[in-house]
Length: 395
Image 1 (cartoon, one colour):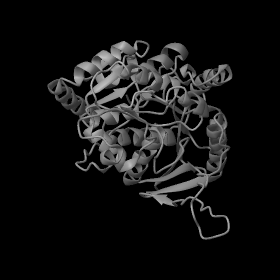
Image 2: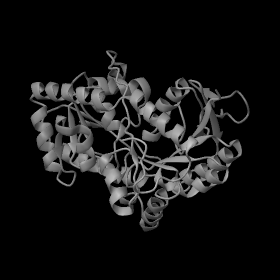
Image 3: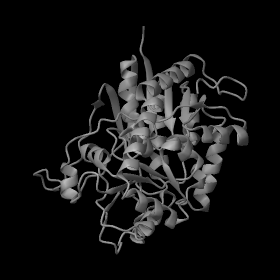
């Protein structure tokens, strides 16, 4: 029997080194290959990094582009690297390329990419659209950006063949506001705690003796609030503020020169180093306001971290009663929790174990791959937009 040919579109590409969509595709693509799919992942061409040597005249080496990743084919296409054009330009080029390939089905991520789905439909390729969170609520967007995402929400309800949400809160929003049903498919975690601690030594911290915050440094993720709150925390335990953002230099500059010597900004950390930090943190702080199921929160749960989480419906849906909750607009509430936990190792251990158990029960990549495989096969065999009242696949 012929393998189903599917395209994954809308992320920066894999191997993942940036955010949730990249993690999703890096975990999903090889699992779809194992389920007898022929998988193509569209990736953004990385810019050359100054200082990379080739021995040639330019002194700059183009980044290595893999042709395949764990059985999945990779297609690298360029984009225009600005805050507002990076994603839409690359998705436009990806959908044009994919239209020529005539895939059996495509999974597209990000509600803003709904605009380009007619290119796939015209080529006879049915699509799934994972809308993630409610993008128009993100503080980083101005009035024009919010208007674009409001339009994208409406298009997301009529242009894809199947709509996918990653949390009940997001599913309920689309159903109540637009009458659009969706399949709920969350993110997963493949937690393998590490004994090694090389990353900790390089950062000058010790096992179980640092607070950890990991996120893109954008206003709705509240790194500035975390820095403000930590100034009120007693003791000498350091805080690692891990992350960055490609188009937020002015915002980052507003809080990064922290006067508190306990606060460290090591920049983005990926791969083994990131897993080491998750494996040995005392407490993980999650301050995000907007979105559905946040991959970083799920990963922190899977690694058995004691969670201190911004109190939103989406975050409560993920962490349940395993976490301690604060309000992002009330930094003293976060400071009080951190002050308590730094002197209560028993509660830290108990909550970490509860978080790991919840993650193992609810956020399994194999189950998620089965769900996406079902939706892709269903869309390929029965294309057509799911209308209110029709079955939404699963979830």
